[in-house]
Image (cartoon, rainbow, N blue to C red; front, top):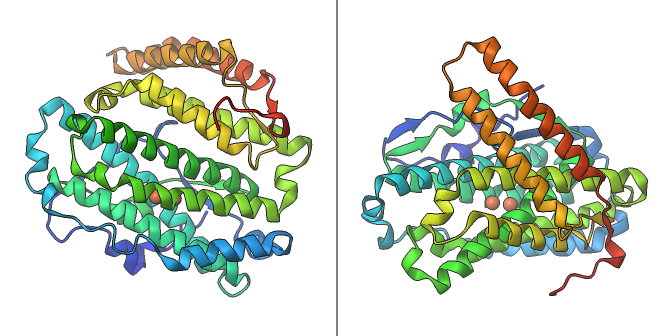
Length: 364
Ligand SMILES: [Fe+2]
Ligand SMILES: [Fe+2]
């Protein structure tokens, strides 16, 4: 697999700060860390947009306006802000910055490469991807500057060259990125609104930027919504229903397990990780009903019971990992929890979904 060539990209180079803070070694890859994607560029280039060209053109026009051109400018509020955090909050906050920066950067790489590879054959699509790459570069760069406030920096060039790239067919890229954009929107806006009500919990000035920031993610999500409607087979028929269920579940379960595992970060903001995730899941599920043919029944009493079992299994896996037992014994200890996770995921997947045309969220 050819990794995207963004290392040589000037935007990527400018993502770092000019100071020279310590380079933060990327966290070990697990199922819970953000992924880097690549896809079938020829299939993307050959995509016929005519079924929804008017909407895509309108979205591209919005992108051209570049509403957040002047938004991501650091101000005096950042000065000395990093020194005010106690060591534990500092640790979880840096983790949050790193994960967010990696996932924003992963979006940048994918969109940039897509735009570059299809430029001559599918100009409208290429232009949309270029605008989104611009936004994600800004987001990643802004997060990386906050890391520099803590004397750390992610080496994005190293990440580009050394991360494993997951290959997804275009329609899977659509499901995965649509969900990650919409979930990103709900995550950022939920934190922003909470901190608006509880300014005493605003541990770092970066949260002041979340309101306009999440509008970028919302527009990116709308772009993928329109793109799926231009390729109606991606959201029509039995296969599409099964895949949409799978992606909704994979994204929700991963987020839930990850956020509960770092609940201290949410506590530092005065949030309960579980309630926060329930809110974000409910809203993202509701939003997805606008384009996916089915969504999950997240109000089913068993839904969170099963997610909690995943959390427990994951804790047990982490404990086994941390033990000093020899590798084969560790593996033996972990096997039953992997099996239990697979069973829970299968049960969750088999729960009856809700047809989107019949989906009636309690609050619109
Ligand atoms: Fe972003
Ligand atoms: Fe985005």
